[in-house]
Image (cartoon, rainbow, N blue to C red; front, side, top):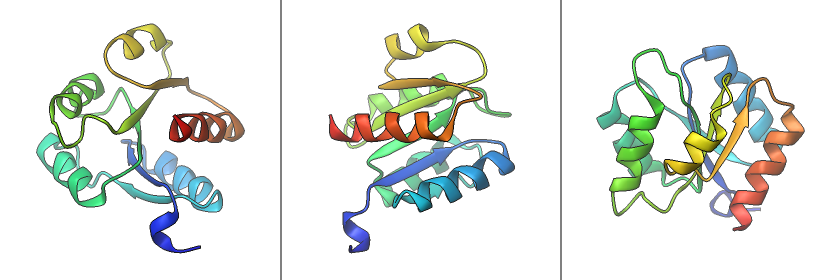
Length: 125
């Protein structure tokens, strides 16, 4: 399988341990991953444009950034608006996130299998 045919997932997360676990899990599942380098909206938007993900997995509560503000910005940009976004949170904000542009929501802590199923579901839509 060529690198180009593997689905691309961009991680927006502020917990280094969570990022490492997600990278391992997603790579085992044959996804190509990239992650935000800093919590800087402009930098993240530029990274998204370069990486061109099929899906974004984003924590809503980041240390220096509001995930919903970032989601609204992504949705407002013509070249990024169609990217699937799954939002994660330790608070049950499913209805709020879906009403504000997220394609999916998963409550932390979640089982790896549940996350993988949700990713596959959204990539097929």
